[in-house]
Image 1 (tube, helix red, strand yellow):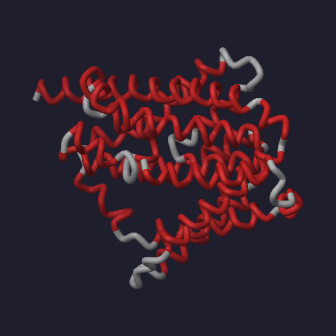
Image 2: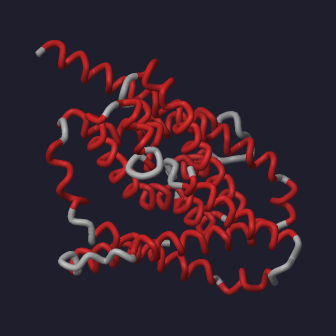
Length: 91
Length: 200
């Protein structure tokens, strides 16, 4: 599992060493690889009949998780907002 | 928004090809996607290391707001834990690894598929797309009731690209640098936190 992360660190090192040269096409490579991987994910999901049958349920669970995650982070950002704003008023 | 539609259409094309068996599923057994994933992580790394702004941008930041990514992480995890109590057939760590995508649906769904299988990977893809869409749609409402930092937290890892324009429009130009800083930190945290929760 940590192979994946070490690949990222290797990339950061290479990118940093080459920082004098702008590697402009790298974003294009990233995007293409992401497209390819999501295509493969779709293929894998589609070939799996159990998951295809449950797709609606999975979507609903995904929505609940997204709503919880968004609401939680919004409330925490609000706490920081109130704290920072009050301090600015005191000064 | 356009980016997520393209991503979704690639996923949907694969889905249809898989359902109707137009492509032999054997290519899945070759572990092909693992090698593509390693290549992806390597190129993501290059793009971080190669960007001189990556490390410079943050000096002009209000020191108190440096903690915003931590608030995003804490809030996301608490929200996801609350939801996981209602999802009886999902473990809390599964839910947390989905939440740790912070809207970075492409990378998180790919990683989770690799670690935990296609089912949770699909949930991660959909859930993190929903998070981005919720932020895009509700940003004005968030600013009104929860202050100017809230759409930045809601946007998670997407605040330096897809949700950036909406944040600047609703929170104001003063929050542009914060938004980029936040997106950068969250982007970096995704592979680590997702891997962490998948390994638990």
